[in-house]
Image 1 (tube, rainbow, N blue to C red):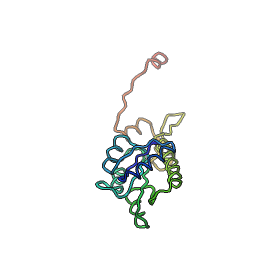
Image 2 (cartoon, one colour; image 1 turned 120 degrees about the vertical axis):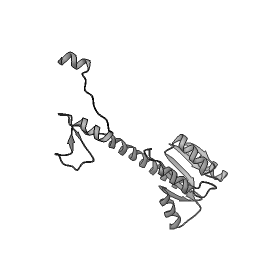
Image 3 (cartoon, rainbow, N blue to C red; image 1 turned 45 degrees about the horizontal axis):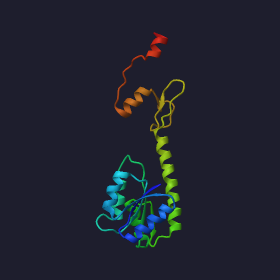
Image 4 (cartoon, rainbow, N blue to C red; image 1 turned 180 degrees about the vertical axis):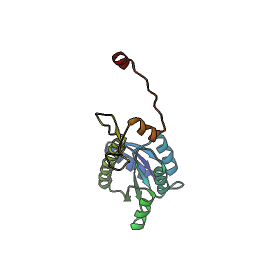
Length: 184
């Protein structure tokens, strides 16, 4: 898994990166939130491990920027901080963090949380895939609108009508060569 690290303390960054590499991850290292944001936009890693307090763009602001992106694959964000207490935890969660670990980081605990992150990302990818599937009647070719109430009278409609309503497109009919040869 590709993991972006945002950590302004050089020693902590190097130790964290080497441990993550030992676990088999590809690691992208940055020294602060601004650098992390730039690299995130360019590389789109699925996991970010960020320090909370950094000069310039801090971990909370980095989380908020990541969460503000729409129509992107989900990014799992783990915040590392020396701050403790429920208030700090809630602040990180409100900023969009998925997890929160206090420093010094227990590598076994981080390893376990990265496994959870990988499972969450796999499930999220599967859900996105399932949302793109459109149920089509194998007999008549009508499509079921998943957003309509589950009602056999209104949820099934012609494919052309469904696509036109959802995507503002119109169909033009023609005859392909195979059908022309067979029917015309």
